[in-house]
Length: 324
Ligand code: ADP
Ligand code: NA
Image 1 (cartoon, rainbow, N blue to C red):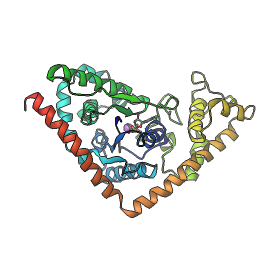
Image 2 (image 1 turned 45 degrees about the horizontal axis):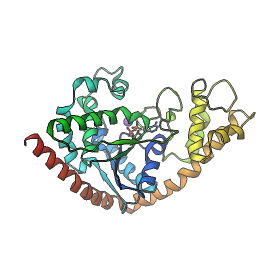
Image 3 (image 1 turned 90 degrees about the horizontal axis):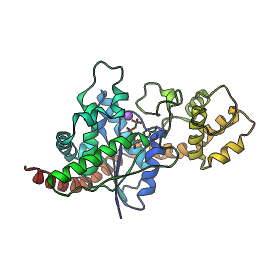
Image 4 (image 1 turned 60 degrees about the vertical axis):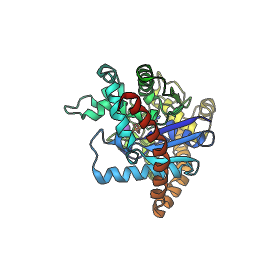
């Protein structure tokens, strides 16, 4: 049995990109391995968050984990901020990280582009992410393609620590879906879909109402052609919609292309919206029940206790090795 660790930022409400790239895999992995799934609220504040909004987004993400099928008796579900070892090992990892390594991170370049003031936490974010993973000596990290570079840095830091302080950390491996590791924005297929995009039309949130989903899909950018064909190079917008379709309808790209041959984008988009609604509506129903019951607070408390037991033991050993 391997150990699995992953998390989502509560910097907005979860999108179908988070669902396809990561959350769906969490649900699968909980049956096979020992799993720790957190909401990384300390990462969310690397860009400014309004306190009430942060609290709501964090609770919402945790409830969506459960609504999507994570069983809190199988996996530990918790908030990063509830387990203090994250911040402490995060600091120690920051001291092992080179400035040049952080400067090379494409997520930092993307998120800081065009801003005249950027918080230092946005820059050191990957060191905290390394701590998140290494605290649990996790083997498998279910992430989307956008986190690959951060995960490579985590491995470099684990190597660096092991070389200086003696072999201790496990080398984490990414676990990614084959198709859909990167779902793109609905308004611009050159950017990944993200919950922190200021334009809500750029993403489908997992909690979007059916009418909103239909509207967003009907307005999603395509091209001036009419062929439903998977060709990411020349038809990036349509290809992105096909890969979303493929995940939500559980159909292959070839099956989808054949189904809409000679029909143009209209019927394809209409069906895509219905497939999204069919998968998301029952999740939304469970979500409302979970929020109404208040059970999420007990789940998070138990999850944090389970996580802290592992994390505190790691932190203690790391500090001993480093000379504290
Ligand atoms: P966001 O950009 O939506 O704030 P996070 O940084 O919270 O995303 O990422 C949470 C998880 O979801 C990570 O594993 C990440 O790789 C995955 N993920 C985020 N956006 C996408 C996307 N557009 N396509 C596939 N996976 C994604
Ligand atoms: Na984000």
